[in-house]
Image (tube, rainbow, N blue to C red):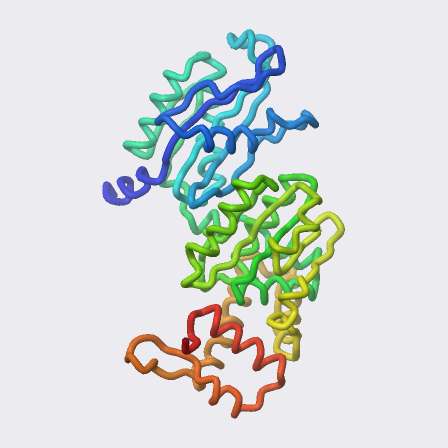
Length: 365
């Protein structure tokens, strides 16, 4: 058990405090450990206190250059000892994707700050979780890291809701994820963007890879560079991404996506340059029908729908096996394009299997 806790406590990277005062000024007040000016600016941008529309977002999360950030924001009640503060945000940075875990912990830190008005008490709880994976308090609530498994976070979204909104078009999202394409999702409400984007990686459950998720991105040069760096750093794995935006201008940036999802209008668009790889055929129709049929079954839970899609995915990889061989250097399994062509699949199926092999690094270079 000690080893499990030790691993878990190495996930948190830092904690910070942002305040909005009675003059409307938003300031980065405190953090532990110290952080860079560029990271502070990024987190100030993510924190809703700097929004001109004055909408309060109680909890937001996202990823930037392999670092996850989680921000809880509260309004300060009149009776609080924080007399010159109207709102504040607690920021946590970490190595892992687990919104529920960090939402729970930041809520406790908020309660502590509201009561004491000093970062010192917050720091004590942060250090307790960092070193022991636990902080307990009768008045502020208890937090146990071990209660929040990553698998629970992966399964927290609803595939059924996605299929309910997009029906057969869900197969476009499945195909894009299978082929490791770049998906951009737009909706004016950040909560809608985050709920939708966090669920998408479950369509390719066999990878269980949430590092492709960037649920809250701004059209800011530094952030876009960070987003594109992910595909460069992982070019060896031909990585795509899922990026969420609340700025409609992103629809005019086809350089950022292969598939664009306008969540507000329930529209999915394939970018011209991605159309060849994303050509749909009989196989995609089968996959789409399976997804819809499974999701519409009232007896099935979201996790069972994910399992059904995962089994179909396994079947697709099984279909690739007869056309695969050990590479000349005796290492990995690669696709024999010649053997694939000899099978005379329908063009769209052959095209998909070829691009899938490329995404899985199974092509001879």
